[in-house]
Image 1 (tube, rainbow, N blue to C red):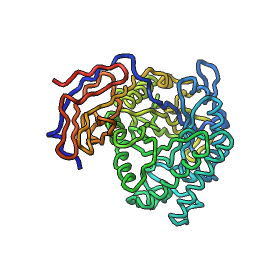
Image 2 (image 1 turned 90 degrees about the vertical axis):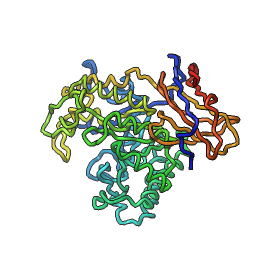
Image 3 (image 1 turned 135 degrees about the vertical axis):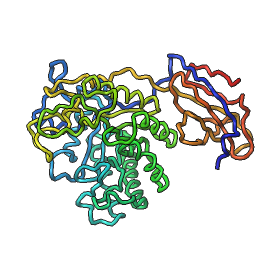
Image 4 (image 1 turned 180 degrees about the vertical axis):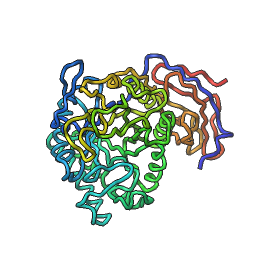
Amino acid sequence: MTRPFGASLLACAALLASQARAEQPPSYLGVDISYANEMDDCGAVYRSGGQRVDQYAFFKSAGANVARIRIWNDPDWTPYSNLADVKKSIARARAAGLQVLLDFHYSDDWADGDKQLAPKAWEKLSAPDQAKALYAFTHDTLTTLDREGLMPELVQVGNETNGEIVSSLARAKDPIDWTRNALLFNAGIKAVRDAGATSKVKPRIMLHIAQPENVEPWFAAAAKAGVTDFDLVGISYYSKWSKRTMAQLGQTMNRMRHLYPADVVVVETAYPFTNEGADSSPNLLGQDSLIAGYPATPAGQKKYLTDLTQLTFANGGVGVVYWEPSWVSTKCKTRWGTGSNWENAALFDFKGEAVEGVEWLKTPYVHPVDVTFRAPAGAETERFIDGDFLGGAGPRPMIREGGFWIYRTRLMPGAAVTVATAAQGDAVADAQALTADVGQSATVIPVS
């Protein structure tokens, strides 16, 4: 247990970073275009500046660096999002110069925050046998892709896994059996690690929860159950289905990146550029999806995306992925009707011309800079740091390096933070001794 911080060392440092910043960490700005092959088969035409474009090449030229692609187990109701379709999609992404985020739904149909339906081939298996099947499906898929030079750089072990995975509608609202849930998650995680061990591409693993209000309790329960080996936290954010504001989303991201050694990504979001429709299929994002200050116009859509992305970076997140920018209206039928339920929230208008929202990808964002807090090491065996920059995440352990206790993070240029450190026991550092190095060219105003 840590000591209360009320009586510990306090320091207020104004962190003034110059315009010359340390090299930015990798970031992910991308699009989920899992519908791409289906849209092409349905005759969809996409244009930019009046010229016809390929979806993958267009988004790459527009500034995207990652394509998200879903995979179902055995979707016998559609010829898309199976392994053959995924191979085609990844090959197209590779040809365009995009990284790939492969999204395992672990279902024969949509898995989301309301349901996680077991594939029919796994329904009657015991939990241990389901874990073996999940491992085999994940490992076989990835090794098959790797043999063809299509190993994804990023892999989601599950999609919007708010509820218990590989489950049923009857259990969708039940409390999660974390003994079972952890068994399944760790099987998928191990499969990705094992497949990556023999590949030149070592996929980073993402765990993905829908809506920010569900993120922190889910990851706390997962960690307690032993699900700890992941590289990215994925969050879906749609104002229609969330109880949190954009500002609160930012606060959640900030806490998560301090609580876990993982990068945070808004891996699903979207916003309408109009409330009109191009077909009889009802729009999923309508008036009830709007946020004050962001009208359902092309400019409003762009402002939402640019503001959300800057919010993400400012709070230590590393990227935003748009869902689903090319699901436009066509003559094709879905189970919900003819056309699209998303054409008013695509990044192409009803005539197939790119809207200004796509310019979000090339906006010059301000990124955080590297910060290292140092306190001199004494006889104490542990030291913790707390401060407003943690957003309420609570005291975080520091790392002993030589004669100092170290905590590394990233803060926005010019940020002013209040910091406290405390040791387990009675030893505390001298208030004048806490320093902060910011980026490669910063000044720290000393404590008076």
